[in-house]
Length: 170
Image (cartoon, rainbow, N blue to C red; front, side):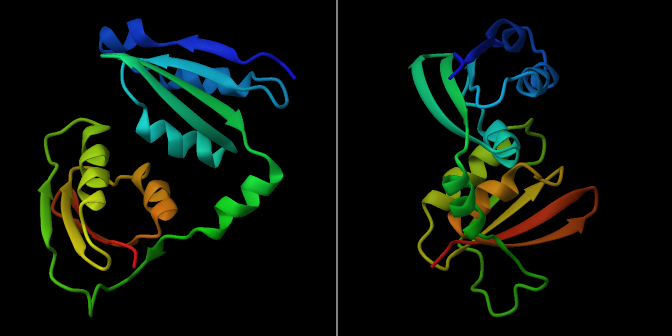
């Protein structure tokens, strides 16, 4: 088995850069079965969903403030089958849902902050409770994370943004 490829994007992130194209290019150049070791200044939550769709699992370790190491490993066929079993229920209408018990206004925040706030708030809801969030953008990287948690979601365009209703599993 090949050694993991290491990609250090910390300096680029500190300078305000966007390393996603470099990361995706590195992933595309991996040998069959090879892992990617990513060094970043924060836990790259949105990247988990992106690379998860490409067949990678992740394991993150925080070494200190602004120092994260994430190993993205190719998923085995058995793990791939298991991950396909989880599903986010996208609903056309939230009729019958309880009123939201928590509200987040994520407008004006840069990614990945809206996603981090939503996932954190979802962790503090009880089974069946609803979270309402307003975002400026459609949170495409959030959907796979909600899928992994078994949450149901309703989205609608409001003005220039998106209103999300997320129902905790259970």
